[in-house]
Length: 198
Image (tube, rainbow, N blue to C red):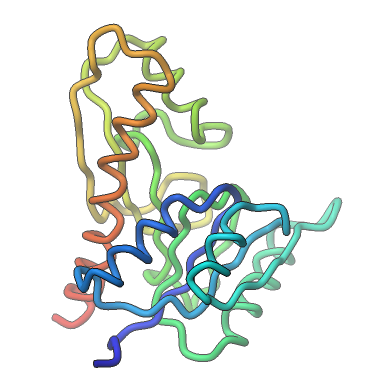
C-alpha cells in the first residue's frame, strides 16, 4: 500500500535520525515515504545512509556570503523540484532556513533539549548536552517543533523528557536523549499529519 504522505529529510551530519525514520517506515510503524534527502555538504554521512536505503538525494551548499533568504530559496526550490512533498523534516540540519509562506506549518525540526531551554544559535549536538550538564538541571529531553525564521523558536509539536542520569558525561547524556529522539520524531510526524487531517 502506497503511503499517503511524502516527506523530505534535511541533514548536515551522520544521518542517524534519517536511518531511524527508514527503519520505522520499513517496520510499518510510520506511514510516510521519504521523497528526498537534502544535505548542505556532500561529505555528510546522511548521504551514505540515503544511498543504503535507495533514497533520492540533493546537496545544496551555502555559498560564502550568501544571505539566508537566497539560500533558503535554493533549498526549497530543490525540494519542490522533486515533486509533491507534504512535510519537510529537519533532522540535524544546521543552516538557518527562512520559511516561505507556502511552507508555513509544514517544516519541523528536532532539537535535543526541552525548548525553550538550551535553544538558539550555537545550541546543537554536544553543545546542548554540555550546557545542560553545566547548568545542573535534573530533567532534559528533546523537542519537535514547527520551524519559523528563528533558530529553535516555533510552536512545539511534541516533547519527550528524561531525568539527567547522575554522574552523566556529555556522551552518556547524548546517547540517552537520542533514544528519546528516535521515538519523538516518528511520533511527531504522525501527529502532524493526523492534526492536518482534522
